Length: 52
Image (cartoon, rainbow, N blue to C red; front, side, top):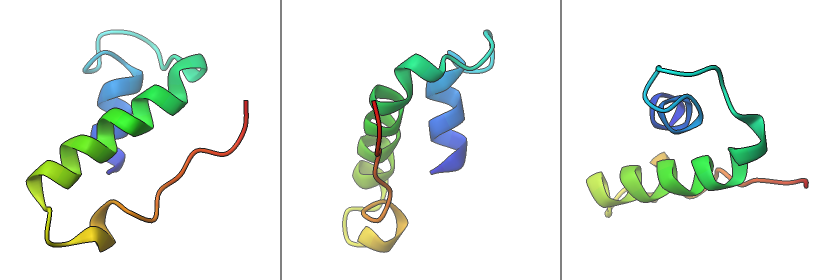
């Protein structure tokens, strides 16, 4: 999850983290990990975004 999240926040490492896009980045990371491990929700289901 962390690797996917930071890849989404930094445009795959090409920009500084865009914290304003954190909810969308988390969503993208969860979908990527969920698609890779659909039978193992412990890898992706517990992560959630809380805040503005």
